[in-house]
Amino acid sequence: MTLTLLHTAAAHRATFDRLRDRIAPGTQLDHVVREDWLIRAQGGIDDDLAREITAATMAAGGPVLCSCTTLGPLAEAAGALRIDQPMMQIAAQTGGKVLMAYCLKSTETPSLSLLQREMDRAGNDSGIEPLFLGHHWPLFEAGEADEFADAIAASVRGAATMCDDLGAVVLAQASMAAAADRLTDLGLPVLSSPETALGAALERVRQA
Image (cartoon, rainbow, N blue to C red; front, side, top):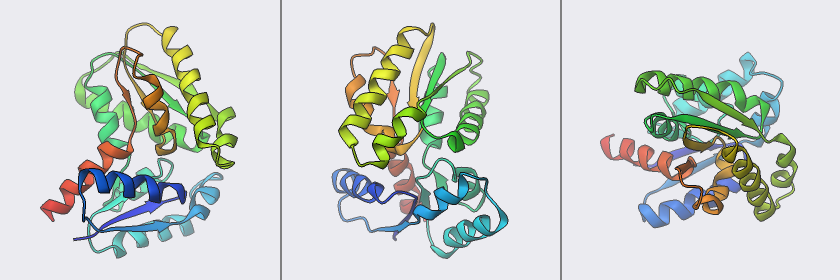
């Protein structure tokens, strides 16, 4: 069975194809790229956009993974797996405070709400420390992938050293994942979403 992925950035195709080749060679991925969805969602998700995303999820005919955190709640309501849910669950189960780094204001509410939901489920009342890094987003938009990852890592490192009782760091958006490789010496889990989400989605494929 095919796994359908809903993306709002074309760069995510290569990311998930590489992960697929490493952890599940031969699995068929059907990429649906709609950059306009994220652009439109910046001003709020209206009824037309909601219908389009719901229709795309329902039309897949099998498991769906939504790689956009902004659209995650809507895709989840339509039956898709939102990319950050497995990561947020792992972070919540560490038992300590979670530093959540993100670059888009449209991601803030859905990501914080999801993380709080998972912390409540885990019985973790240590709290969430939001870290907005919107000033780095133009690097991603310009295709400066290494510079973007370096900037995210530097900001996360600085914030982590100032935050007591951290149990984990989450990089809320899939586009931020490469920064995790630059933070392996931080002394606590730095979680990114693509690999954990793909693993969970592939399990849905196996069970379908």
